[in-house]
Image (spheres, rainbow, N blue to C red):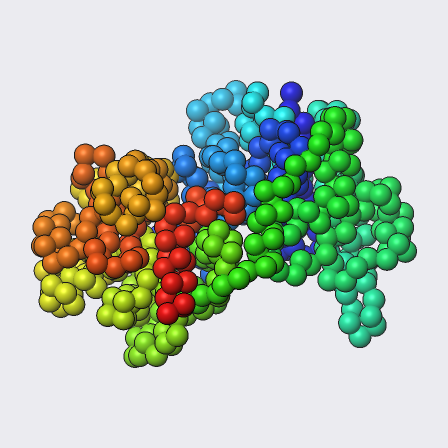
Length: 532
Ligand code: GLN
């Protein structure tokens, strides 16, 4: 039977519970354990797929096509273990299953209630991650202790811990020690109160991880331990890291968080091998080169909206021992003039939905094409590459995506027949991993070093095959297609070192110790540009 670790959060949101959970999972994996991770989110959306990136940040897509919370991106990047549909449950998803069971008559005449029916469904969700091939399941509970919405989840955790028994399940509470600058003091009261909230509902955290700006004193540790009912050695400090989130795992290992967890779970402590991780950090901390990449998007004010894209650029930097400076530019700012792009070494146009910002993205792509700058267009970015090429190289001024213009005579990006029939929004895009066959002698094939690849998708519109010949004749290379050639997956401009658009989202598969080939391609070309 797998052991369980539950991670809750207190005081405020955005404490970095996902990164803390992922860091612990990495340490346990590097001590030889098979780990699985999941996130339980208290909001009512069935998944974050229909939420605005302003609200929720990026939607992370798994191989099996689940649209999930961005914390799953941290899980995958830190542990290099792929998540699945069983890795993210929301209140909406839990209630949908309970209501479906009720309609199917499965509750045999009973009144259906939060306890036990919703909590049973949550426990089933937790159990679904506890498969035979896993030693330890880490379950992060979204939200903050004290939220009305998280109550059923916390109640399910209480029951789960009780039922699994001592030594088989533990609760780690991540909390904040605010630093009052004027008084020069770290405050422990909010943490005491958030632990009191948990105790009220029957959860007794085994370990406290305290986020703090400044180092904790022995006194703080003793005070927190006494008031929060944990031994002082199980109060762990998680100080803000200076350069990169990839510093968190070694920091936690230095305080033996992982071995303390294993002791509580009554599991043997094997040797920790963080050698490859140390190499990553060494490269992050001591870059030898630098380049500047413009990220031209429409949610640039929210860093989380392009989380995996930023991370992937950092990974490519790590691989090249280079610092990648990302200049986030609102696409709308480029509509009048592309002056903001002066001095950049490469451009990245990420995915997105809807009309806003399209002219600016197209202007950025045109700038890259005309100034011979490295360019990576992802999903909507690739679609904009095709539109820009059709408009300015083929001279079809009205070329557009059917997403933005119903009346264009040149819908170079359009819906496929099966998508035309779709009437619902949630979960109906082309989602998850699909194979792609690369064209020999293309830039992409060279970078991947493979003929067949698999990449994750999240989009409705596709390259319109009616225009394939015209675009190819004018110099656009089809560098990757679905097996059989029906769907265009990658376009390139043949005569460039790196001018690539991909219909899929490479950012979901990049890892700190193996940067994604397309991001490596962009960053290496940008480094060459910077060196000129
Ligand atoms: N809006 C485009 C589509 O649905 C692109 C989606 C994306 O960039 N993820 O096809």
